[in-house]
Length: 104
Image (cartoon, rainbow, N blue to C red; front, side, top):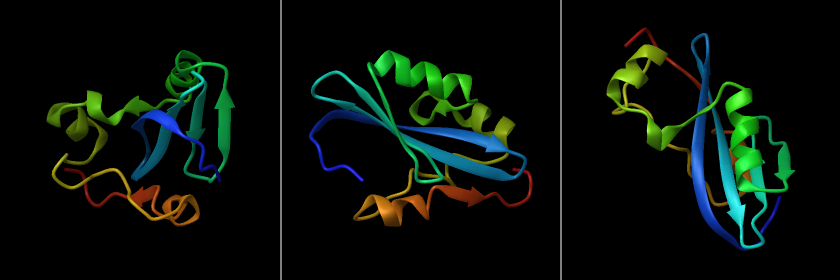
């Protein structure tokens, strides 16, 4: 995928039924936004604001912006879920869809 320098990164989630989907948002030094979705698609936007708007329109929320009550409403606990980590984007994509257990 990309190895370009970026100035910030955030993680976003969407919960569909009992499945949690991650998306990674990066702001590049040029001010553009880039989203890697759970299907491995890389979307580039003219600005970080546009990228955020697209994520919100698709039903995602920023992971750092939710509290335990928000998480429980979505069917998981913050103690049980953390942004995926991997050495490369190809491996990362395989970790970006998570089947949730029973209702928290």
